[in-house]
Length: 337
Image (cartoon, rainbow, N blue to C red):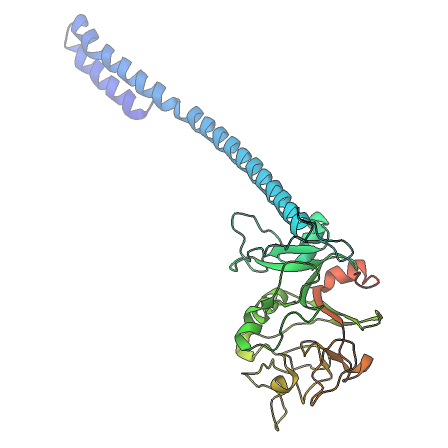
């Protein structure tokens, strides 16, 4: 009982001294009962708080359970989409009822209601060990999730930023297209450029390893690897910081940042790239079938130190993953087709 309650009862008793006992009972007893009720109500607050805390803890546990169920459901949906629409290159796409191949549908680049936990394909690989395919990643909390191709062969965890396979996608694009990305994100053998802005956000968080896989028209393969691959932001024109074109800014047919004073490397070579005067490698060049080609400019899909400037390669891919991941697992034996 509070000090105020005791003082109030004492005051009532003193007032009763000059009154009859019956009058005193009439005066004091209701007050005592009232104070006892108030005290009982006040003393019940603590158990109520404890009960409320228990209920909150139970609700939080239920929420965690629902989040886990949602995550599992999202993963199942992702796998259903993968197996329904994507196929590895050694498998045939599922036939339709009339015997023709079913064309895969283009997945949206935003996440919808799906939970996206992974900042890149290496994080996805560590968490779930999935097969190669298209998945959504979120390199930065303030970015919308976007679709990438994750190469889970060759040690796993590679986020592919460029791929050439069949010449069906035109790589002779302007600055805006190379900034935002372009191409098809349906099948494992589609061609695409992930987008300079997305590549920048993907790589800005730490040190990364770049692996470039190459294949000629006879099926022979080579690869090149570079540590600490990264690019600057758009203000610095996505300046390259690795390899044989190190420190060069990105150029497209409508934005010329190269050192070729007599013309535009991007216009001559039919693609966006980190041109110098002009290139020793140009994986975004014009796609020529058969390998050796003739033209006014050496504008094919070329890698000088392997097949030279007048041989256009059949397959190329540029893929990255954190350097720490590379140190722990090793590079493997190359991508499979």
